[in-house]
Length: 524
Image (cartoon, rainbow, N blue to C red; front, side, top):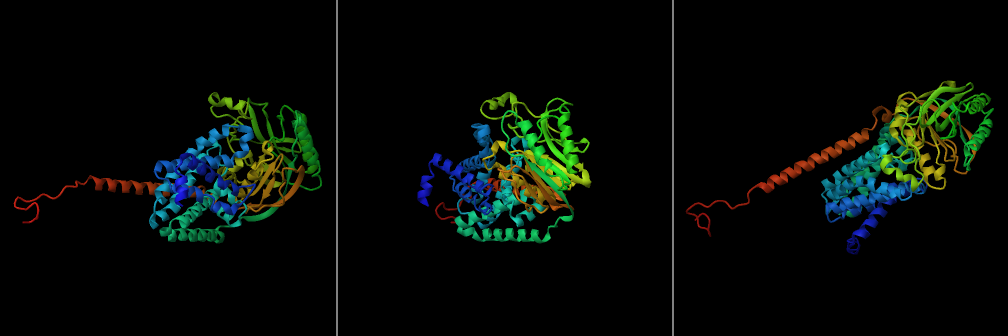
């Protein structure tokens, strides 16, 4: 152990170890999907920050680990952003510096049982604050939230219906902290064991107590995935392939047909011929078709990404314009300063325009659906608002064709399980090139995934659920609880500091002697 400590005295070696430790949790996300690894993946990072000689070094360990985490979770962006991804990761990882400092403050040296118990609450709360801040759309959104690693674990999905992905992140970090205490602090093992027991008890209670979705019917929804279509005329040829696949659905009686993001590359107002072709498909299949248009609009300036519903008579008027755009992919923040990013990667040459409100669409057959576009499915609040507004089925239209041979398609598809479990609504994740997936109201996968090598149309019979999950009803209460924990910790630290200062301010002088006292033998 002392040899390791001496080896880590080099700042460069320690920084590299910190970045590697922070990158470890990526193995718990798809495609590796080692979900169980998430419960110990933070332990090396915690032990490193705990052993820092100073609070400043612990904060730097937090920054290094955050840098490794952000690069690892977003490594598939390298072909698009190139060196720019390291700059973004370096900026966002600053949020983990206070978390590193907190780790040393609570676990450094030989922590008392009380400090160790506090760490199991405070450190997960601090991690949630990092996820909350970086979840802001302008900072890249909530991609890579630690709780998302549990997308295929049934008990975890039940917890998501209670407190969303936030609660899952909190519990995963709490288990990591408890394990770190178990392996490094003999004197505080009892609080660590108690924390693990409490986590197991909370999971069991949620399993028993949380309400199940009320399923009162089924609908048939078709997903059309054309696959990879390259070339200068890819827009026209992709449309032809989507048209061909949709015709195959005739006679299968779908209630709704969903195409992926950017499935139509022309505004239907400028191309009435395309609108007529889609309407003919609707008549032939007996179902409305939800397409996604990525084009300059004919009725207002600018380029929009819009979900449009087309029926037997043409566009129905139901439209949703994407609200949360991908930084650098669909717009460049502060373009006057960062516009040079277009010269080193595939950053947006022209900013897309934003929509102003979410929309619940009335589809044929009495079905109400809530569309989202691309990485909007990563935001828990968007699906929650759609469920509260009456959406019976959630739909995400996406395209990860730029990242076809990376982990991105699997990561994106897995988010649908969390949104379904959080809201108690079926979630359809339809893409151009895969992975397309469907999840039931409990987050369980329905039918097979359409992988990145698939070009097909598939009909899924999905349940229609009603009722309100605790997460939909109460929202981000786990985040509010984390804020209260941190506020209580700060108040406690403030009171402790005041007591120490008052103690230091007392004069340390010997008591005054009376005139007749002997300086050698007081009192004589």
